[in-house]
Length: 77
Image 1 (cartoon, rainbow, N blue to C red):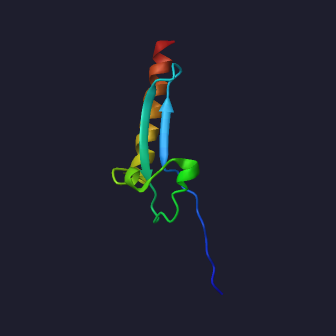
Image 2: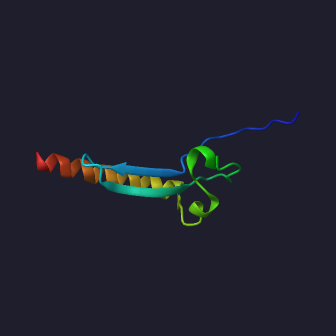
């Protein structure tokens, strides 16, 4: 029995503020090998992944960015 599994992963994370200004825009390298970039739908190419941030590091950066943004928003109230 030959079983094939397909997984979908996030390849890019973009966060904008209320004024639509870019706060964070990064490419995220998944932990597993990429078999299909689905360029037609994603716009992601292999060259985008050359400088991509590993998934765990990207997750930490996203969390820090959101926490700082929330703190700034609370202090501005």
